[in-house]
Image 1 (cartoon, helix red, strand yellow):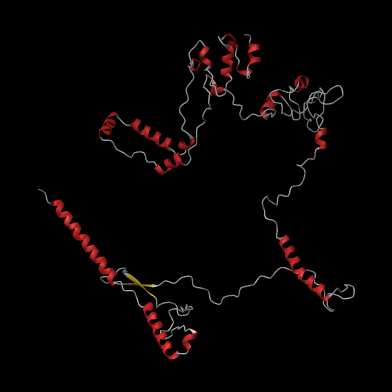
Image 2 (image 1 turned 90 degrees about the vertical axis):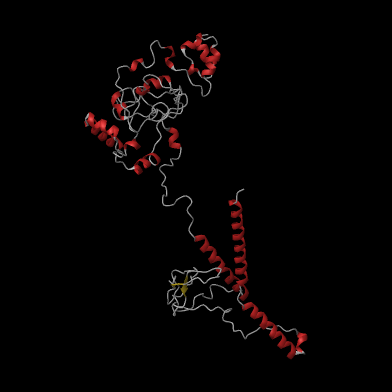
Length: 423
């Protein structure tokens, strides 16, 4: 097959090479080369000389530590240690081999830990299928370059003064814009030339714009006609004091409050009857109309407290002996009587109830035999009150707990004796 035919057939003509037409199945080969994520065969497969033969004689650069490790200063410490070792005599080296000394390099391990776990950065890695070939490190990296943007160094190399067009503009006007960059705006071809510049073929002029027989531009708005019709939003003033998402001011709420206050007044006027505004004045004589009326609701001011509340109070601690047989004993207590007398005391109504006051409920039928029923009810309520105020007795619980513990101890002793006995 011819190379031109092979390029027309495949979806990606850029992968077709000169020797692909001589393959046993060129269509399959080109299909596999143009398939997604296919890794190409290294390019030195067809070279006569060995791989990396051209790098002979080039001085190899010493290994450079990464920045995050070099920042710790370990390189200088190691260098000083190596110089010290070189200055030693053979007898000293032999002695140190037999009796080595540890901890000669004085370095803070926290600094090393931070270097690896805090400030470590990933090295630059190659992408999938990006193989190394001879001379790859000397190639110019075009990642920072943008099509259509000329750097100062390139302008100086081309001898372009300020405001002058690039030297390839005349050929672009003749043959058209580059097909690889259809969206690229090139002044003098499909975009207007900078202000102050003029068309022509003299030095510093921008050639002749490509137009048809009717004088219309071929590739784009080269005269800047469409830009004049479109509104320029960049020139409009932008209010930078407001931010997106800010809450609006409370003007609407104030208006609603005013309307609510006005509505009941209108109803009262309707009930009393319509009165003309011309005959009756709303303000009494001798009183001037104020300039500003504040209709906002007045916030209630809390009365200033005479004495500040005490946040906390330190109680006096007192050591106590734990009585034998107590279930929840404590080795220290607190003195509650030493509190501030001036502080207001909380009144507990339930604790301060006197024991002689008893609530009695009487049914209407029992009113006839009042003397007998009242005394019985009183005694019954008194008994209930006594039972309620009686403190709980934990002595039976303590005794039960002690007997359980004794029983468990006896069982444990019996098991240990059985284990010790051997036939």
